[in-house]
Structure formats: C-alpha cells, structure tokens
Image: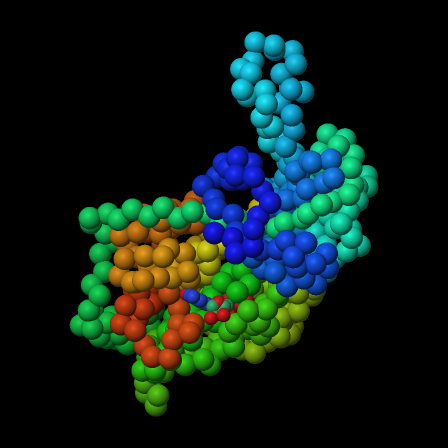
Length: 460
Ligand SMILES: Nc1nc2c(ncn2[C@@H]2O[C@H](COP(=O)(O)OP(=O)(O)OP(=O)(O)O)[C@@H](O)[C@H]2O)c(=O)[nH]1
Ligand SMILES: [Mg+2]
C-alpha cells in the first residue's frame, strides 16, 4: 500500500499493471507533495529500477511513460527497448466504425501505449526532471507543465496523448516491482548437503586440488561482469571462508561506475598465516554497456593471454598495451587464465540491456575460440527471492531461483549446469555455514572447469 494517496484510479492502475506483466506499483514521488523540483524527484526515484510516470492534466487526461532502466543522472542517452509512453483514450474513437460494440465498454477509456522506436534512445538521463526521448518533458523546468518537442524516439501527437493541454494538475512516479510467485518443489533440483561436514570436505578438496598440468601451480580464475555485480565481494567471501572470519580486503560497494579500477590478482591463504591455496582470483573493473566505458574487450584479451600485471589501472578509453619485449614472447600457461566466471546480479537479469548482452556475446565467442572454460556466478540470490532471504537452504527448492538460473543460462548461452547461485558476504559480521557451503561449491566447480581446460591445452 502507498503511504501517500495515489491519484491513479483503481481500474487504470489495473490496466497499467496488466500491460507490464505480473507487477505491483509503489508510489515513490508525488509532485504536489514532494515539490516540482528535480532534486526531490531524484532523491526519491534514482536507482529504483523500473518506474512508471503518471501525469494528470487540466483536461482530465491521464498519461505518462514507463522506463525499465534506473534514473541515475549519468548524463547519457539511455537505450531501453521496454520503454513506452501511454495515455488513456476514449474507446469511442476506436469503435466509431463498429456501432454494434458493447455499450458498457464504450464508457471506458482504454490504455494506449506507444513503444520507443527501434534504434532510438528512450531517455536522456540527466539531473533534470524526467524526459522521454528528449521529446516529452514532464514538470519541465520544475513547473507543473509538459513540454513537447520534435524527436524520433516516440511517434505520438500531443492532441492524442494529452489533448494538447500542457498544464499538469499532478505528476506521480511509481516503482514497478515484479510480483514474485514462488512455489516449492518437494525435491530440490540440485542436492546440497548443508552440513559442517560438507563444508570441511569441500575445503579439504580445494586445499588439496592439484591442477592437471604440473607447470601450473595455481589455477587462475578471471571474474568479469557488470558494475556492482559482486565480483570483488566474491573474492572477499572466499577469503573470509578460508580466513575463518568475514574479511573485506577488496574494495566493494556501490557507485555509478565501477568501484574496482585496477586489475587485481588475489591469492588466498589457507588460514591467516597458512599456505597459499591452489587458485588465484582475478578481479576486474565492471563492464558497462557503452563503448569507451568500463572494462574494455581488448583488455580482456590481454588478461587471458597473461600479459596484464597485477594492479594495472584500467583505462576505458585506451586498451592495455604490453611492453614490446614481453608481448613478443607468449606468457607461460601459469600466467594465463584457465577459467572465466561471469558474475551476474540475480536481481538484474531481466533488466540486462541488449547492448550489454551483445558485449557479453562478443566476449563469449572470444573465449570459445580459445576453448577457455566458462561459468556463471549468480550473486545476490538473497535479494531475489523472499524465501531464500529467510533461509538460504531454500535455494534449490525455489522455483523463482530456478527460473532465474534458466533465464541467465539462455541470455548468456551457458548451460544451466554451469550456473552457480551464491550469496556473498555483504552485511554479516560472522561466517554462516549455508553461505560457505554455496560459495565453496561454486569455487570447487571453477577448479573442475579449469581442469577441463588444462586437460585439453598444449602444455607449453
Ligand atoms: N545482498 C547481497 N549483496 C551483495 C552480494 N554480492 C555483492 N553484494 C553487494 O553489492 C555491492 C557491489 O558489490 P561489489 O563486490 O563491489 O561489486 P563489483 O562487481 O566488484 O563492482 P565493481 O567493482 O564496481 O564493478 C556491494 O554493496 C556488496 O555488498 C550478495 O550476494 N548479496
Ligand atoms: Mg569490484
């Protein structure tokens, strides 16, 4: 329930929800209450995921727009093929030709949606009030008005959309949240033993792991994935399990762009003063959909080849250049990457943009051509499904998590058996057995995949 009263009539709310799938709306911002100020809008609506803007004008029109991409004030054009403008229009206009039409329905207004035109940006994400396609501006210049200018993104006329009346009586923004329907399977779809004995067994297996090729003393695992997906947190979590308490060596957190800006190769010790374990986790800068931002695809190629040194500072506008002497002789197998892990935030799978998916597809084909083992680490499962949040042991009984695993598998083209859901340590102060078992299971799988690669590679 919204704490502030919504102006959206129940029937129209129902129609809007139905057009968005199985969702619920929560009121984030109401201009008459919070003020017609861009700062009030951004304070309440930034980083809220998909949102629906609903405006009301003096002629009684209810209209607005939907975007599936966060407001972040990044100053960039936003590609969002899900975006649309909408308005409720008299059904009369559409049924004039058919007078037999049901009378009751004639009284209703119907929802009319205008999708963003292909290849055009849906929004310009700046610090101002929201706009759609830099074409339709709501609460323009912090006033209760809409402003419409020519553009290519949406094909509409001001008369049809809002009766040509630019004066607003209200403007609301709703968070659009998918309603999670979870059913439990009697039999979990993967078997996990949530016992201290299993944790000890997994730690022992990992400790004693010997890479298939003797010249490789430690398996090098590369983590790549979107900004904020949990790459650095995965290293921190694995480091925590082997240290015996929660550690935070790699910087993790949230920022608009990647918090990790250096290439880091992290060895992990077996206990605080123990021996190094037989793997190295390589942490990278987050991937971004735009070219010239985030981790560069060419950099990935240099990392795979073992040319990039620890602590190299990424430069998104210019790829890594190895020094000529080093580049002329190929790196040893020990220095190369043996397994690549795509780290994907479970809460953002459905929101992954086409551009990011394309970028990942290019990376994947590069890895395929070099036969490098790949898997997906699906993080933040605790934030995805309420039953898993209550108890991590429900993970393989939750139909929702299964659906997310299948979705990420098909979007990235990686088999379901190569998708491992985990919960990283993010807020806990002490280790938790269930968390550890999932994390160690994922790590053991990475070592197995690396073995597959080493089994097949030329051992120079
Ligand atoms: N609840 C929850 N939060 C997580 C999980 N994994 C990571 N986080 C949080 O997500 C945020 C981003 O995590 P990072 O590990 O910094 O992500 P990253 O992929 O390294 O991000 P960049 O370096 O910025 O590209 C942090 O606030 C973490 O605490 C998880 O499994 N569950
Ligand atoms: Mg990071």
